[in-house]
Image 1 (cartoon, rainbow, N blue to C red):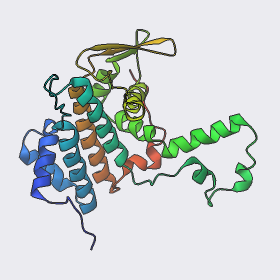
Image 2: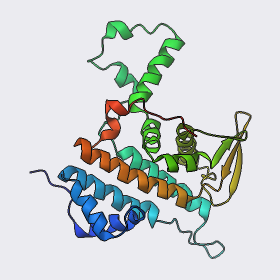
Image 3: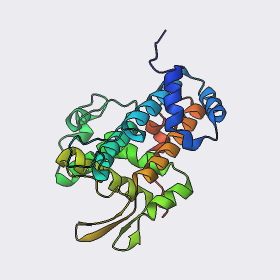
Amino acid sequence: MKKYRYCDDKNYKNYTFQALSSQFSDDQEFEAFYSSLKDSEIKDQFLRVGTLYFFFAKNGDWHVNDPNSNPVIEYFTNSFKLVAILAIIESLSNKKHVDFFEWLSDSEKDENELFPIKDKAELKKLYKEYKLDYGSIRRCKLFFANLSTETRKKLCNLISIDGEPVTIERVAEMIYMERSKFAHDCDSALGISSGFHVAQQKNKEIFWKQFSMEILQNAFEEGVIIFFKKTASTGHPNPIDSNQNRFQLPSDK
């Protein structure tokens, strides 16, 4: 029998309940939800997500050990938490990463249709197709697209571009870009803040309206429950990868 690290462990269940308590009226409702996840693999993944989120983001501040500094600085700790949250979202997938060259060389593809690649436009088209299947941002977009209408509208109204609110797809892109700035360039994720933040991108003004970590965490917690409800109903441990989700990004504001 397959062994699971988290499944039915009382400590992991306690961490997960504390991490996602905003989504349950009490521990009995949490237990009822957990029991509805009948497959051990799904239960194991649910407790893995809840436990990692509890330690890395919900209760996991980045501390500065210096007498001349505050122990917790918002834009430092939020940057690390953002990386953790998006890493957890990306982990909700059973697709092993495949690089672009490997994808092009896949033996299941008809090479006569792929090669030779005629021009840059054809290459760009192929890369776009590859990103639809294996791009990390795709999982992020799908996760936020599945949030409730109320939460999507709330998030959309917290970011504007040249004075106009954005779509939920754009919200996901902006959040992902904030994460990437920190992960790749060590540039703090200033957009995720309890204050206001203005930035420029391609001659456009990006205005973040108190898009706090608390708001992002509440959205994430809601999204986790929605994800696992769908998982339980479909019997698939990774519905974020199902074909039916591939082109379902709503454009509501």
